[in-house]
Length: 189
Image 1 (cartoon, rainbow, N blue to C red):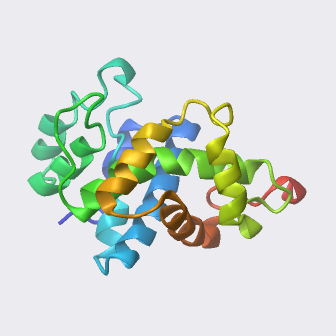
Image 2 (cartoon, rainbow, N blue to C red):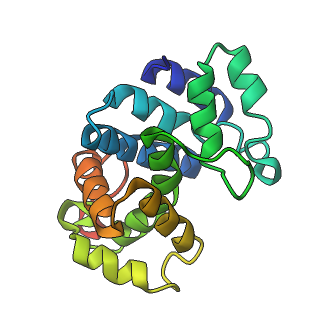
């Protein structure tokens, strides 16, 4: 089983750009929150979340095409590699999310982008972000326009959850790590 320490070692060797590491952290903490929701191994889900964009910096146009062989050769469990590949389902892979972990990763990868964008605009960042404020921004397709809302809705449907429910879990799960995520808000600068 992939540990957080091993995920950091592997990811940080390949991913050097600050914004990509920050995204990895957002997904990591979000996956920890989803693991708690599903009564699963928090550290394991966080590790998979942190490693999910392993090849993106080197191969942005071929994302996830250079992940499977490399991670398997590094001894990463095939189930964890499959989970990572599944977050690109319908876009850059044909690996359909099946497990709660895979469905969660598929969903939170995009959803954390909107949460992060919401929090960055607020004086107190994620520290006082409420779901209703998130939903207002989620409905505005011009806000964080690169985040695929249809994919998020599809992922939530796979999880059998509403967007507001998943967002509440993620916001609460990310909030304690506001400083690490650079989401303390505009009044903290």
